[in-house]
Image (cartoon, rainbow, N blue to C red):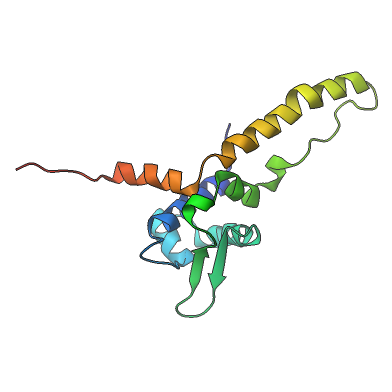
Amino acid sequence: MKLSAKSRYALASLVKMALVHESQPTITVLEIAEELEISKIYLERIFSELRRGEVVGSIKGSQGGYYLTRAPKEITLYDILHSVEPALFSENDATVDKTSQNIERALVEMVYTPMKEGLAKMLTNISLADITLEAQGEEGNYMYYL
């Protein structure tokens, strides 16, 4: 499965937010864009969709920025992807319903519905905190011996 650039940038940005969540409750799109080397304009559009999906909120003004609407452990991968890629979770259009209802029914029952349910289940079992924890592990909690 290949995620769009929009989904990948949304995920990376939210992991960045979660990494600094405790020490920095709000963060600007400019800060994220510069640190992750993502277009600020593109990131603003993504954050607009994340805001509509209630994954992030915003505060205006000089001390403003975006904040996570819930703790990272309460935000699932499903919440994030559903905000930026709603078509991924939409119902499929009928394929051959007019010419062969049996084939259409079989496709819905054996392919479309199980795929949609399986994807939703898997994505709801992964939280932003899980991804953040994995990201922290690579940055190192190194122990040095002298």
